[in-house]
Length: 88
Image (cartoon, rainbow, N blue to C red; front, side, top):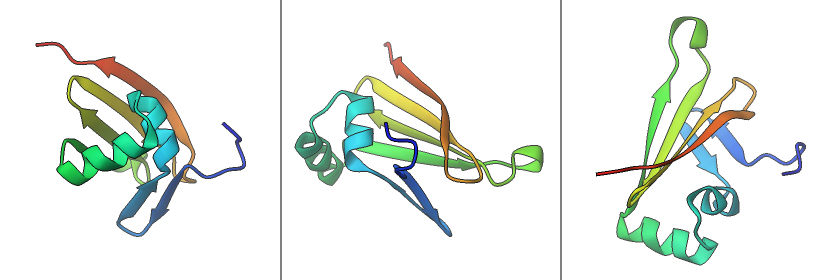
């Protein structure tokens, strides 16, 4: 990933993640990611930090038995990216 390229943008309450970046994290081609999002099979949760974490976001994306979580720093930089395969 090119560090100068923004893959996550925050504008007020809106958060945008570049499709190719998210697709790679979920192990999908971009076209499939978009199709599954339209179907409502991929969904996300945005958690806003409080206290000393104010200004940070934790984004979690879920697709079937897959989940990807990223903490977005105040400047929009993603960090602490995690990949998990859900069980059950």
